[in-house]
Image (cartoon, rainbow, N blue to C red; front, side, top):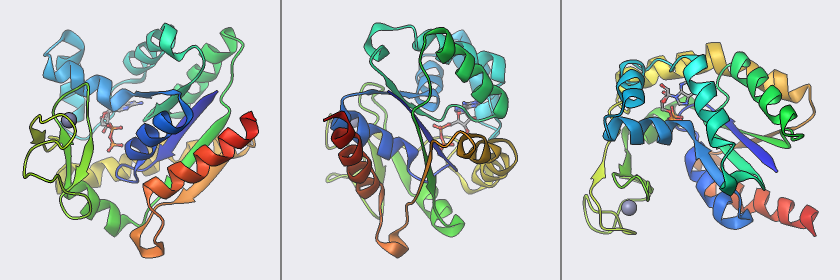
Length: 223
Ligand code: ADP
Ligand code: ZN
């Protein structure tokens, strides 16, 4: 089963994807996490990606598509994957269709998350992540702070703020989302596989609620 997480930055794609991973036993593939790991390890890819990411721009399609193509070849995702942060452009979506078609697979569900913009900005400014690439737990200083300041509850590593999580880059990332990524909503709607969920404190519907609901539906279908 192939699931795509769609939604503007800060809507909770990463949170929902990692909860879904646990609940339905399918691996999450996050292009953002792959880039961050490479930046931390200062690989060639990391150096290239950093140039784009630090400015709030997208990493070019050819680089990103190749990374996902290679990742989808690995053994641990042959029963399915939750794609978090990919595709982000129509070109990436078309390339993904082709990659999957060659493996006699297809996109089964696109989970489109929406959140009011004021809430997105507040969430991103307060977002912190575990610096351990094997853990990557996401915290929010207001909604979901770590028990001990600056230390990950799960693995004890340092908690850091992403370099691109500042008010300046957020604005350009949201704009980029509107221009480049939001056309994907129509693309997948026409294929009849779009499921839209609002994630907002205002309606008391958070990422964990969405993850639970979707996991329940998927596990029911599997039975
Ligand atoms: P967010 O959803 O909060 O923007 P991500 O971790 O998904 O965070 O992505 C971080 C950054 O990595 C993006 O702003 C972009 O620069 C780059 N990136 C991630 N996925 C892609 C992609 N599919 N195509 C191009 N750039 C990407
Ligand atoms: Zn951790």
